[in-house]
Length: 193
Image (cartoon, rainbow, N blue to C red; front, side):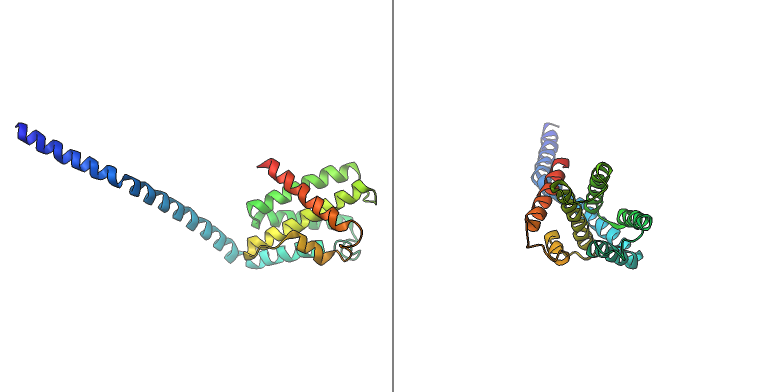
């Protein structure tokens, strides 16, 4: 009887030892499988959105590009009501198809606009108004860059977009104003994380 108890204890001790020896490997496999499932789900969701609405995504990116490229074009911005409706439509589609980063940028941009233009709807030439205009344009550039990354996987610098659309960026203090606007947005986003 005593021998049988020792044999059972030895078997249990060996089993526990074997289990404890393999425990780190088991935990690692569980974590890897969990990450694989999470990554696969993310890929499936992205694939679904791209498959079901590829044309919509393409049009959304084109519309944001047009909004920023034709920023000062009177033909594009004739009707204030139409412009507001177009912006609401852009927000709606950006919410539908944009990543969490894009939606966050859009939210901060909207809050910036509400706060800034509620105080002073007339954009003029004072330093504060020029600073606010630079911040607004930089938000739009960041949204476009974020959407570009969301839809294509290519990351572009929002400052490069500024170089494309502002023809006198290197004259006066335009470049410094854009760098300051970019830094201010970085600070705002960093505070919110």
